[in-house]
Image (cartoon, rainbow, N blue to C red; front, side, top):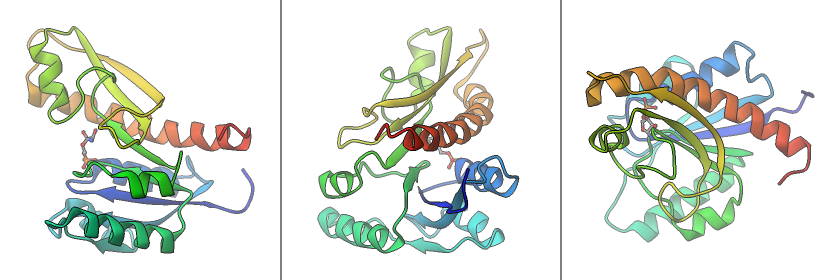
Length: 197
Ligand code: GRF
């Protein structure tokens, strides 16, 4: 898909398995049109930081702080310096506010472990189980100021088994999340080339 790689920055707060899936898809050529410019973590204990180190991906730790406006200004400035084409949230525990969302329109995407618009927010797998659903899934969507609410890019479905627990369901959903995030990034760039944004 051409020579100039599109820059991706991933924002993560935890384990970082979606970040790893994106990094590996770039390494193996599935997302050969992308380059990972940086990982930004919101806390020093984020597992994603270890993955970035192992893979020699530049990383920044911007600790969440009381003053949210100040935090978002710092985050926005860092992102502006990095000049990403795409900003991927992967388990990032902050709902981004207007200044960032409006600075990067149609550039920030997120993965959520439910079939949005159902079960927004935390512990979406538990919410689906408690609602008695027989299937759930995951969604990659654009980020707006409203939690888990932007336009949907790609969704994949997964049956809920009768003896599923929150843990078993989350574990089965995770590989599907990885696959969906990678496919969504492919799709996005294809749509971009077709002038959809
Ligand atoms: C994933 O379940 C993702 O859908 C949600 O947070 C979790 C992050 O997991 N937004 P990981 O850090 O990518 O392993």
